[in-house]
Length: 118
Image (cartoon, rainbow, N blue to C red; front, top):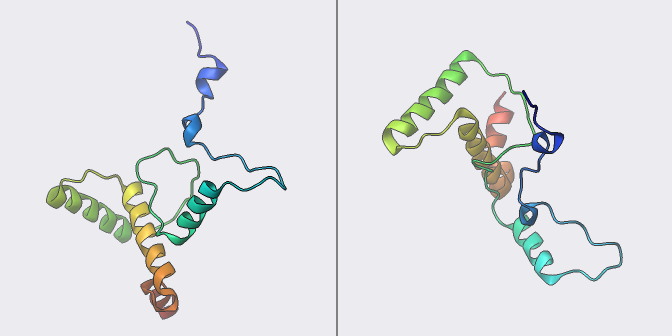
């Protein structure tokens, strides 16, 4: 029986052109295209990551009722829209929506209203 080599176990998950670009050395002239894309990324609405490999993990504790609500929403999306999404993607989409609305409306956002109701 042979075991996989270390290169097989620790292979990169992103294509080289999709990886994070290296920063230019200090004093180097800035590329206009990269400045434009950075400005667009900062000013445009944030989008959820969707179906990609995620490198970061966060544990969130929820009540059994909240978990049932998430499962119910997931099943309703499958039934009514034909969308087969997992709970993680559903939560990432919900977080992206809330954060986008907070970024757009600030103190008038539903997030601020709900957090200050406590």
